[in-house]
Image (cartoon, rainbow, N blue to C red; front, side):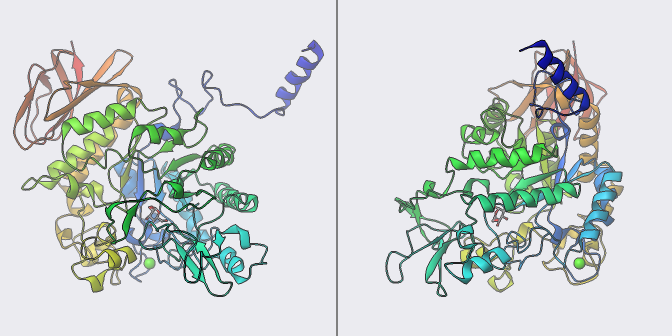
Length: 567
Ligand code: GLC
Ligand code: CA
């Protein structure tokens, strides 16, 4: 390159113009810390189901102003970002995951100015807002789908996946929906079928159409311009299906809705998905935003693919493998954590969300005390190397409140799967704020019944009890915020043959923090050769000396201990 052209490039650089900056991992930018970590790598993310968090106007439905009113709770908990599940206008067949307009707020949840106020108030408390990006499908009431369905010649016809049937009354192939029965619905107006991976009211978008892609990128820009810090991408793996639409091979047994099982790989993970995600990431990068993925995978190799070959897809694809262990079993957790730490990108842990039974229900062994297990799970989430995403109510050990009668079920898949599968209502019940009417959720009858344990399990009561699950969460999140070893340190598994105690070290610049959790209902001892004593940082039990011996360390049933190792 000639000197003149180099000088020209320098001049352009000084003027702040020139080729777009390439991400350079070797030279961190000002948004990265000494280890090259971004804010979202140190964050504690908190999922809010807006319908269930707090109802500000007494209609029984949670809303954005309700969230705003409780930001001080989140601040005192130590949360860095909230992910709000879809709060856009929607017929609410799938409680918001059927979006009728991506660029507005559902009237029952508030207005765009309520959103702006929430964002501003959150920002004042150092809390960022992450919204939900329902990329795979819209509602059948979205204007795009209404136009698409109106005639075969409509310019938006190809925005969704339309096909002729195989013959009279026969869908294009045998594909089934995630929510049971055929994944195709005949629209008699044009005598073609449309594809829906989820409910028939959720037609799949055709991401192979560049107009769809560009309209969906504009949705991101709309919210990034309003100050949103990132998105959680819904059902990413179903963005594209095999365009040849081959019949699925049948496999043994039936699913929870009674459909014969199939190998459904043709409905998921088409290679174009990765190219499309890279382009979504480019839009996010231009706003310095973070992308979290709903990435259910059966192993870490499949999860790896979502980071992108050169970490150019999702920054935080959720690791559900810990949430799927489903029993308090140290060896299984150890295996999954070790795998997560060998993944291509930064680990992202989830134990509970609005689709699965609450973690304390799944992990508390029979006869055991749920609050002890809740503290253990909190220890695990907050001390691992990675970003934890917690679910509202976890901080007070809320448990499932499943419907008792099919007539009471609101989640359509709960009606279809009854009584084997009762749907997801039980994990979405109102947040329990205090011991008064409706647990302080709101004045009107809540859309789902409050759990009867609210008189004891609520934020106000637990805030006053130093040993509560809530105060334990505050303590451990504060430790994570203030202890650089827990934020930045490497992960070193310890005592790998121990069947009951899950233990590891976090190591950073010569500092060692030991985390030990007794996953059994019996007292246990474990010996560690990493040092002779440890200074107690946090313990889930009441009285723990300031310094404890490491050979052996005695642990009470379900006790968690975190300490700084001394030689
Ligand atoms: C995701 C959501 C779930 C929703 C589905 C369809 O799995 O978490 O709640 O029903 O996508 O959008
Ligand atoms: Ca309301």
